[in-house]
Image 1 (cartoon, rainbow, N blue to C red):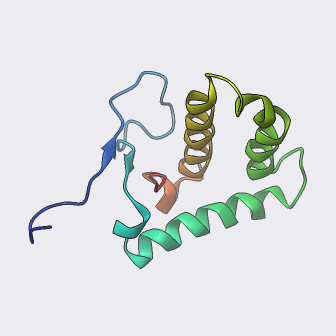
Image 2 (spheres, rainbow, N blue to C red):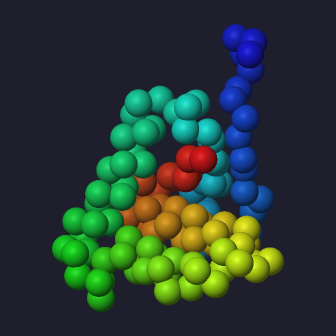
Length: 112
């Protein structure tokens, strides 16, 4: 890669359904190995913050809410044509919940 070349990125187009800080910034997804240590820490800290706010209570823990959906429907989704769409939605939902934490997380983009 040349000195001025950027790593591959995935930009989400402007989307009327994106209500999580879309007015502040687009979602930019980049490969994990292209992230700085600060960007990697932001991802990890976002997950930890979701857990901390939920206090391990399934009724309010957003990480449990997203992952339990995978547990309940995942076995079926893995066997049909909805697989890519369904997992894409789960990634978008988790990214959205981290963005919704606000502050330093407002423009978070889920790494891949």
